[in-house]
Amino acid sequence: MNQVATRIISSDKVLPEYRHPSGRRYVGTWLVWLECPEISKEARPGQFVMVRCGEETVLRRPLSIHQTEGGRFALLFVVIGKGTRWLAARQPGDEVDILGPLGNGFTLSADSGRLLLVAGGAGIAPLYFLAKDATKQGREVTLLYGTANEYRYPVPSEVGEVAATEDGSVGYEGLVTDLIPRHVAHADQVFICGPLPMYRDIATRQGPLAGKPVQISLEMRMGCGLGVCYACTVKTKHGLKQVCKDGPVFGLDEILWDEMTSI
Image (cartoon, rainbow, N blue to C red; front, top):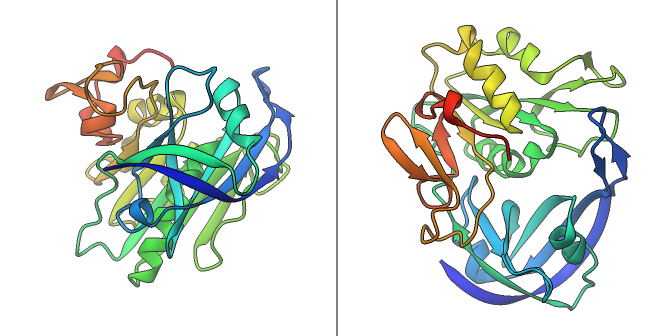
């Protein structure tokens, strides 16, 4: 783990502003590349960083590591509040204080040749990193990618993508979780990243996933990111766990979903 002052290489708005059917407004999605060999050389898919987002925000913001390339790494994030708005406004050359890489990351079994990835909305951020890493190892990757509408982040060309949109504008019309039964049979491992209601839906009707090793990346509000403040504590079958230190990746069946509250 490193605390470093990184410099922004590039900052681009890659998806436009939109309003979700739930009524929540998203200003847009940004892709930010930062120069930081200390983090990029250590980062593994599923890990995250804590970003200091200006003087007006007391707490750092946890963001998934989206890609690494040489001595740099990328963050892909939706702008929804003061902290992410500040980060999106930074320009190339600006300095940003980063803590990371943090968390446990995804675990690939040596004998898993075929992987099923399921991304809900911004859940594409860490799964993109996993997909790239897995295909470099010669593994076959199928990505089920669900969004509200046609505004979608491009996935790696070597990955088999199956699209779902809630409004039917691209691919299957409906929730990405509806596609899991059609594609899970061939998978040796399943990796999922999305909002809490998506996990609850999968956990309560996971029939086709029964017996499959399923890992999820759990998003929670965090205070320190180091396991000190206990703000991200969740109840599991193995007792209380901290998302920042023991996660953010857990087995789907580890979490006591009835005890989870919305974030």
